[in-house]
Image (tube, rainbow, N blue to C red; front, side):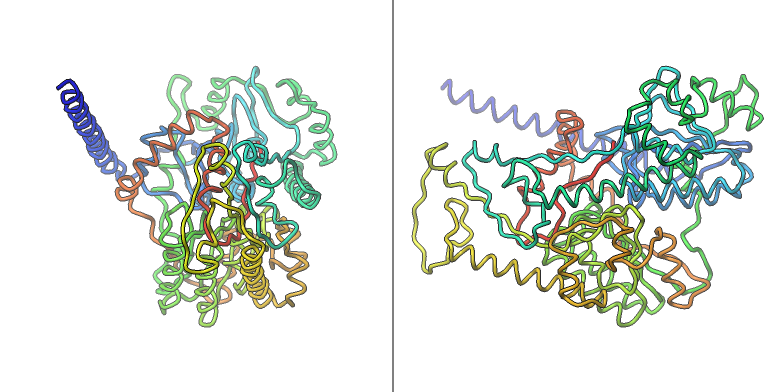
Length: 588
């Protein structure tokens, strides 16, 4: 009887908890509905206003719809599309109500090429002669790179400016796998295809060290060049300042002319009051960049029926529908096909920001690019990274545009088949036995090592995929397969090097790519339309509520190491032959 009541009690508790959770979700949805209704109000920009440019939020490819992810992350989960930042700054140049731009940035969440897009937009705004002021209590290196585009940079007198050079660090799991009794069986093509190295090595291979040294040095050169030009400091001097770690205190930053003054925020606000003619006892009229973009007209707004379609391909490449943070082969190929079949769409721009993923899914998208290229101009614009599968889907375009610091190439493929036999047998005491109707019926079994014959079969498949990859690159880039192979092998290139070796055509940002597509289609008046449609935030929230909660607590638990958790999770979930660069490059 005691056991009976125990189970009854457990059942009742489960029902109560479920009801509470459902109630919370229902309440959250209700609040979200109210919030979304409120967000539709028109943005009013008062006279003598300051445009508040918060660059500590995630700077993404596209500004998302009202996201319920913020419910689990607060304001830190806000995000804005880099192109909307650029369009807002362009409008503000001629907006008589905007008198100045105030940049707040401490640790931006964006890739180097994205930061270059935003930085160029700030420099372009300065042509209006309206002042741009940056202030922060602390500047990471990425933050300082963005802030250096301002007319004046201020730092808190007790704050910190990090300026020490770039470093790249990889985590290796071989030792941990050995302790767990797991063997990573690797089949790959390309000595530079380093995505598999964390599973089989304890340190970087000579090939990987060579390529990482090359592209980190190139990233750093672009970084220093931009700061040198805007701050009027010799690049060699900046190199020495970083190399000798000369900026250790705020007074050092001032002495080396890295900043224009050491001020507290109230002093900066007083300067903005003087600029806008605001009484010292009154608040400054301001509008946030997030609100300001709501007043922007549609891109390329025109009465013309002619269109340039922009297809956003952002994230890991996977089969199926994917999401706004993934490149689903079905969703993206359908978007390209829709643009191809629309007679009003005269040109297509594929915007790629991806380290790759499934080789098969990449090929599905490539096919639609080739079909589109036969009937209208197709341009590829590469963002922070267009590597491996990310390069695959864009290699067939008429022209490829990159930023100087875009990570590209990584033409190579690999497969990982874990062998868990030792873990099952010796760690857990689990054994397996069974029957099969053919020699290779269990070829992908993870409870035993591959036989030489099985490894040969899988290697043959990987080799074929690689041969297909370099063949399609050769066709798209007007090269021989041998020439592509010499640039491939999994090697990563920086944007300006990709232009030199022919993997890309020109250096240029997103707007430049759109203008080039329009010119190729002989358009002078056109609209810009975006594909695919953004995923409905209500559906996204309901389908990913569990993942949002999980991600929130994972971020709280792992902190800065959350990215490592994501990488491990991604590695475990990979299936099929992969064309990806399986690590992220982040500059702090």
